[in-house]
Length: 385
Image 1 (cartoon, rainbow, N blue to C red):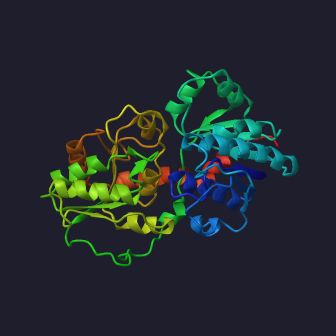
Image 2 (cartoon, helix red, strand yellow; image 1 turned 120 degrees about the vertical axis):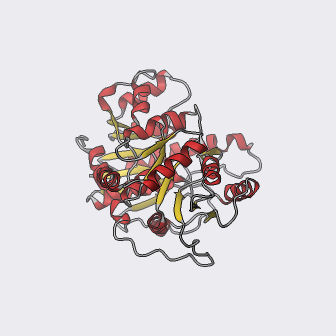
Image 3 (spheres, rainbow, N blue to C red; image 1 turned 120 degrees about the horizontal axis):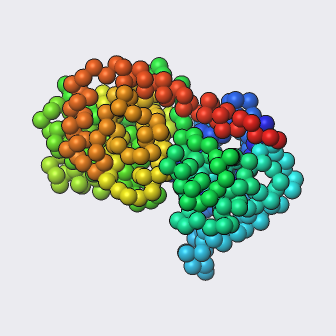
C-alpha cells in the first residue's frame, strides 16, 4: 500500500507523539509499504534531520508543506497561533492531495481530518484522546473514516457510546514496542559525565517522560515517596527522562524529603537508541501514576514504557489504572494503588522477594504481540484501496 501519514503539529518533536508517529511509519515501511510523512511548516528548535533524529528507514519519505506559520508572530495573539496555522495547513493539504495519490491516509488528529476526508482517500484515524464534548460534526467525520483506532477499550466504549460513533469501523490497538530493540542489548556503560551505581543495591527504574501534555504529572512524586519508604531496603532509584525543567523540580523535591544521591539519581532525557540500555540496567521497573480522575489516566493512556519494560524481560510494578488492564493483569505485573507511595513501596518489596520468572515469560509474550510491525499490520488489515 501507498500510505501517507499526515502529522498535525511540530515534527520532529521531543514529545512522545513524535516518537509514536515515527514508530508507526517505520513499522509500515519495514512491512513493505510505501510511506510518506507530511508535516506542517512550523517553528522548531530541533534542527536535526528527521530520519536521523528518529532512526527512520531511508525508504520513508518526508515532505514539509509550505503553509503560513503563525507561531511566534508578535503581531498575532498567542491564543490564535495554532488556529491560524492549522487553517493554512489544511488549505495546503487540500492542494497537496490533488497531486499526491495514496492507498490510505493516516492521521492522529481531528484538526486535519476534514481535509483528509475531502481527498477521497480512505482515512485511518488513530485517536489518542477524545473531544471534551460530543458533537454531530465529530461523529459524522468519524463515521466517514475507513478505520478508527482507539488506544484503549475505555476510549472505544466512550466513542461508540457517549459520542455515538458507528462501532463497525472502530478497533482497539494500544501503542506498540520495538520488540527486537530490547533483545540482546549490550552491557550498560555509564553515559559521558555520568556515574556508576552504588554497589550491592537493587536498581529500581523509571524510564520515560516525567510529565505529559506539558504539565500533567505521571507519578514521579509517588515513586520518590516509595523510595523514601525503601531507604533501608537496599534499593536505588533511577529516573530517566525529561523535560529538564521538571527534572530539576523533582531533584529539589527528592532532597527536601531526605533522599540523597545514594538513594536516587536523575539521568534526564536520553537518546531513543539508549532506552533499551537503560531498561536493561534495572532490576525492577515501575509504572507509577497519581490518583486522578483525568481522562488521560482513566481512558487515554497506552503506556509505551510498560511495553518496553515487558519486552526487556523486567519485573514490573504497575499502577492499577483502567487503561493498563487492556495489556496486563496480575499474572504479568504486581499492581499498586495509584497515588499511594506506600502501596508502591510494598509492591516493589513483593517483587524483590519473589521468583518473577513466570511473570517475565508472560510479559515477553505480551510485548511480542504488541511489536510495532504486528500491530500495524492488524491496523491496516482489510482496508480497501
